Length: 426
Image (cartoon, rainbow, N blue to C red; front, side, top):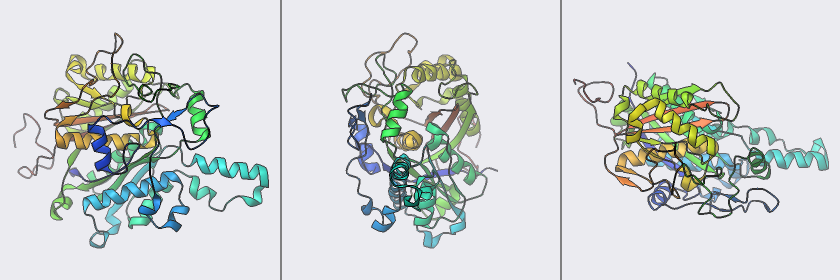
């Protein structure tokens, strides 16, 4: 039988707070993290706004020497992992290190080191390239550095599926524990790519909002949406096999119930117009979790605020749920923190965990009006009331669709190796 998997630790570095407490307080207050790009002179660029992390000091989380050898996306990952490990009360001195693994993804690696070293190559020749350029640049180094920092000797993987990376990383960690390959997995995503090349590249795709007003730049599902705002940060969680967590007396936030994936097999940047690919991922997640589709009342959408994503994801929800889609509350955390690319799904997973824990659904900030086909409940206001299940969607360039189903932890019931479902005899 597949093992049950629970969430016991949370860690976050985000544009609205450098801890889960700060982040969640910001979410509940409708705080946004948008402002002028300060990392470089963006005056000649189409896009001038981003959702940058503020007041981040890597030496608060790691040795200064270690920090100098890490690029920003690795620093964010280690910082968020430190919070998650401490939050979980997990001491590796008391664990079998080979039963504790790491699944942390990153979308693009360090664009900063690519830019820096390529310019050095042009100006000063190949002999001046740093010997660390490759290990600082490659995407797996977030997982590698977290594994080294915390002594995680089990499965160590790096999933790269563009904007679905964070969700896939947590989903693969979930599978690892389900099938008995680990007791503990530290999982999530990180990103730090607000750079000249990163901003120029996404702007060339017409994917970024060129709005100058920080209060109107990221508008998921709104009729005035104009593109996403690039964000950065990391979301890291500790997942545990239920018996392992109970035995050590861990606090349990929620239970991970299902994980579904699909591919659009259609276009390198555009989702399928009818939403059938994303719909299949949602259906797969519910089927995997043995939860009836009719019991889903909340979805944390990919919701990028690009015209086609929001329209096609709306179609996907309708395709998956039929008429019941009108009864589902759908929101987008990107309305407050922008699009964290490879870290987006992981931070949104944390949002879902907190919403399930606290029976609260945050508003989609800035949403005022939608066009005709956009007729779901996109949460113009926040809601308080039971949130038994949460679906979290992530859709990535290349046609990657990933969905995770999270539910309230209801305890161990009569030896059944999964949550009690509505209508089941226990």
